[in-house]
Image 1 (cartoon, rainbow, N blue to C red):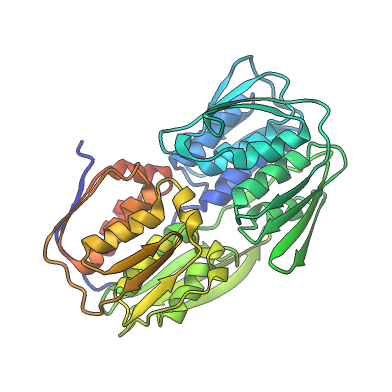
Image 2 (spheres, one colour):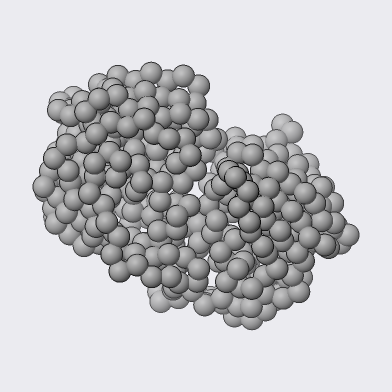
Length: 439
């Protein structure tokens, strides 16, 4: 089967209501925490993507039984110290930085060496971000090229509390330390730059020993050793990062109106909503409610008559870090010059996304100026493509693929986008939903 997706026409105007699959961040966290809970945890709407399936495979290798059917997933947790596995096991995080980094926090007491591997993209990413602080608990690590996968972890049963400062706004690093802290003696103190707070909310809902206080631009998080974790029954809300592709496609289409049902609108994830509203996009939340500590709503989007440029405040970056490629597409059609800064973290993702954002815009004929972590985008409200564009060699980054699809359907031209299987990482039915929207 060909791995190239071909698009030759813009999307038609639409007025639809759709459902997006479950939140990937919450799905992986639910799997990991359920694996150390006492009893059977159940989840509906668990995202059945390669990243989440890799998390399930990982806990299976650690001796945790799981059962999956069309309606729900069950995890038979054996408690905080319940992992039981053979020597020399290998855990494959595949493309998932969330899984690769978070699971190390749960393995810092492993008496047997465990090897962690990943795919080509994940193996290029910096794992010292988590191994350095985790080693302070007492765990030992051996890394490839001093910072990459594959790595080997050997834990200790004499884990000690630590103090950790997270300066980059990485929820993965912060969460890994939090998971380690529930196994360590005493109270671990984390000073973390603002980032996604799913782990904190899940800890609080499960009544784990955690406190969170705001201190300027940082959170002061205190986590103590946990005795037991209750099983968690969870209907996982839809993923706002996956919803973002359809939000932007609506914003860039003509006379279109879309409702996306049951979306997680956690305030640490809605940076793209704030940014797009500043750019003149009509977006409202309806039917807002709270579930398991997370805020959920239906999102309505209507295509605007014109799009405003933006000098984007950098304090919004962390809440939109996975959506900037899409935001750049909106800026490409804006009236004026948009400016985004302090986005170095984009190049620490599955691919160097800031560079790929510039590349895609340049393929569209949009002028850009890239300077380290900042980019200027010279918008063109009349942007219309009449040429052939090929997108390939992007390390199979799912977001580069899906952003390119949105660009093809929004601006026209003949597009050949390689590695369409990359969507299996986070959004397996993405192309089916696109087809439904365009029917």
